[in-house]
Amino acid sequence: MLFAPYFEITRTGIGKSTSLSLVILFTSLFSDSTSYFCNVSVGGDPSKWPKLPDLPNSFKSNIEINMLEESSTLDAVEYFDNLGNRVALHTTKEGLDGVAVYDFPSNEVFYVTHGVCLVANITQRPEADLFGVTESDGFLHVMSSSTALKFGQQYNETYMGTDIIRGINVDHWRSCLHWNRSNANFTVDYYFSRSNSWKTSSDFLTVPVRADVAGAYITADGSTKAIHHIYEYHAFTGSLDLDSNPDVFETPPGVICKGRKKTKPVPDFPKQFYYRQELLVSGIVTYIDVWYIEKYKYLRYDSRPLRPTNAFYTTNPVTEILDYNTGVYFYKDNILGNCTILPLKKSSFGAKLNHPLTNHTGDFMLGMQNPLELFYLDKGYTFVGTRPCRELTCDVFSAIKSNFVINGQLDPANTTIEVFILCTDCGLTIYPENGQDVPTVVPVMMTLLADSVGYSETIQFYDFDDSDPDLSVFDVSSCYNDMSKLNFNLRLPGRLAIDRHTATLELTRLKLAETMGIEITRLQNLRIDIDYADVYIHASLLDRTPATCKVCYIV
Image (cartoon, rainbow, N blue to C red; front, side, top):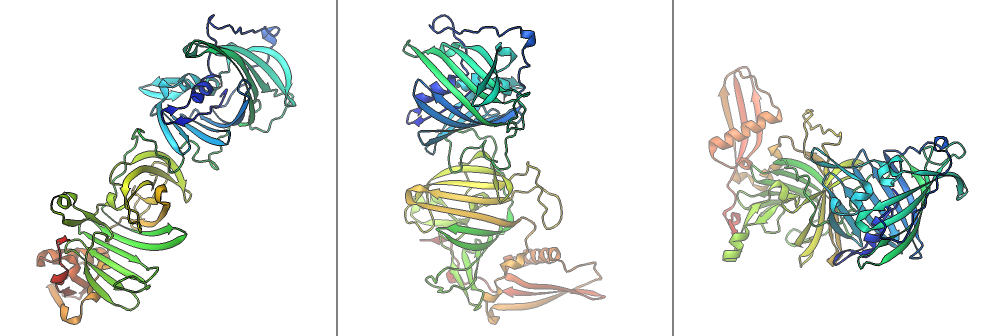
């Protein structure tokens, strides 16, 4: 590209420096209304000119832009990817960094500076003339790199001879450019390294070294303004180096672009799963294991408290089994063996309020969160691109949650949440425990940031498994004494081809619970034996949940 822009987002939109910097070097020579004259002298016999340099389909370049009329310098890094249909510009001026990301499939450009993002339509911005936009089957695509650099035979380049720039042997080309939209008129002098007398650091034989742009354009008030920009190209390469810079074509992490098109929906999560969670808050790391079954309204939550809390006063590993059918949870100390049965609270893991009931009566009713709600993915999320996480390529969905309740904070706060989900379209395959090659939704990481209260939280998800659950993980028999259990045996005559695998046990448990009309968690310690004539089913029937803990409403 012939330039890299500096842009500034103000409360009213993109600052004035954008319109100047973004159009100067791709603007074309205007008509006779400007006083500037573009002078091109033919450099000898055209048949003896060197061949116009070939440009790669994709490139990366550092650019130093010296704007002489402003006595200022801007540094930029440009990433141009014709095959990927995307462009990114990273700029620095007066110590301020800016990013512009051009998403041609969605016809959007994202300007980010000071942590603020502004979304604009590419075809309505001057950059449409800069990069060149073509349409095929209704889809926009960036044009070739020669169009972006405004260099090539279609621009009537004239060979001006050889020169030395920054000590580098170069070929000098000149052209006149014209842009009607800004009434602009420019001479562009391009200097490319000479392939036969200079070896570059690039993997490309001939690279741009300098572009010198001088001319004038008509401002909004009708006056003429002269400009003179010199663009110094450094480290030009045909490789984008995405291995070390995988997110250069994405908006920065934690930045929300309001009004961004929703190009990819949040995927539906499985209705049952297990995962291990690593939670990092304020330099403290905790680990949690979670089992979830939406159909049976059961949750299990294993953790180790960092400090003794009211009612339990333990730092031993504990298990909480939450039963959203009966409104209770079982709190078990896995070292001492103690177990307490308590009513669910609105702060219980996986709990959600019935807000209409809350608003009308002042009371509230608890329910269990669905899978998306459990991962805060219920609404308002926008796909912002792919990013690496733990060497995995992930789809990233972002949202700002207003009045979000932060753990340990009394007052709600506006919170930016980003959820990383394994990209199933990126060549990665997940093999569940059953060994089948089945695409599945796998959460990888989540970040929460509430700047107003200085809170940040990072959650890593491991070992996500959505295979059929083992209901024995919800065993609460240790919470009942022998007087509250009934051990029983069933004998079924017949020589059946039956196994003792987990799937068989679970099907047996479900059928028994259905036949007896009870909650499946009341059937525990299930075992199956067989002999030559009969099948034997052994199990324990637990008493009902204590009535004092069985609630529908919590005040």
